[in-house]
Amino acid sequence: MNRTAIKDTVNKVGETVTVYGWVNAIRKHGKIAFLDLRDRSGLVQAVDLTGEAFKKIGNEYVLKVVGLIKSRPEKMINPKIVTGTIEIEIKDIEVISTSLESPFPLDTDGYDINEESRIKYRYLDLRRPRMLKNMLIRSEVTSFIRNFLKDRGFIEVETPILTKTTPEGARDFIVPSRLQPGKFYALPQSPQQYKQLLMVAGLEKYFQIARCFRDEDPRHDRAYGEFTQLDLEMSYVEQEDILNLTEELFTTLVEKLFPEKHLAQKPWPRLKYHEVIKKYGSDKPDLRKNKEDKNELAFAWILNFPLFTEQSEKDYFHGSGKAKFAPSHHMFTAPNPDDIALLDKDPLKVRGLQHDLVLNGYEVGGGSIRIHDPKIQEKVFELIGFNKEQKAQFEHLLTAFKYGVPPHGGIAPGIDRLLMVLLNEPSLREVMAYPTLSSGQTSVLNAPSEATPEQLAELHIQVSRSKKPAK
Image (cartoon, rainbow, N blue to C red):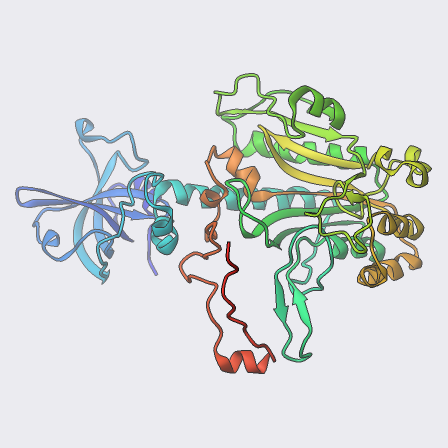
């Protein structure tokens, strides 16, 4: 196909080119029609001197336009667009496909449009310039991360999506098995156990841009259902190594991809959990010097978290119901070596080798040095009240640890939340191609949906349609 991207038309003055795109706008001036044609790369003005094109096209029609690239008169230059110095004199025009009238405007930022409508017609909503820009930047960010880590010896590995349900702190999404009736897979809350097993396998430096699934109540900074994180693990490291690598990664990323941004402090401050709570009343403080400055980025590390918190009824860790403790981070976080004796004496005073990454008042990542001693892992399971059956759910990990496990640790920054802050968006959904609404309704396809009786029978499942309990 002999196609010219619209952004490249500025370099082809005097040439006849073929461009494709959507009709962004139509203007009629006497017998002359002006068409603004849009593709992913930009917008260009096309001129129909006969006025015939105006009669057979509408907004959002897809066109093939053949025309001569001409320089605009100086007084007609449009500095607001990349192609503002040229226009296309139409020689031939072909309608590739027609379009219904869009259910909402596509030439605005879209913030004032009902979100349910935007989600229903997400393929249209993504055409708006702001959303397209967000998708392009997201792609650049993930590509930068991949290249940065590969240059430093990391191996990208995909881990399973169909996995095992284990009590890790949030509700699992479970998937019935057809081949083993009555048993279920779980979608991964994170690749935590798999990446630790990769360290046992000897990969030493692992990462992936991982999809994670948690049945949690949504917030503006937490998506319902699924989200994306950079998952990263290293062997033979101390906490300092993880902090330094992460700081280098995101400092360089901001400098390369977001030059308009500036860091409030370099190197990033490292703050102790108890001191931060006392001073700011939060473990994710906003440390910007000027909170009205949208281009200021205040990264910081929060360290010295307690390994345990007092367990409540909301925790998903309790087995016997008698345990006092829940993991502050997760059950695989290593205790500070200086505090190991306190595991038997006073567990709430044990510090964990946890590190949280905060940015402008949001937690954008968390990680830790992991437990690699099976005896300490067993002790943590006991302290959080795991019964025999719950411990058995982690037998694969404990068995693997009997075959020589290196010390290891990592971090998992959230891609969605990081981009939300970097792009000054009000919600995670603005940086996701197909987000889920707070009701659990997915974009475009309107899942979840009912399964057919045949599907349920094949999975040996019966659906109970009980009435809601009276209030």
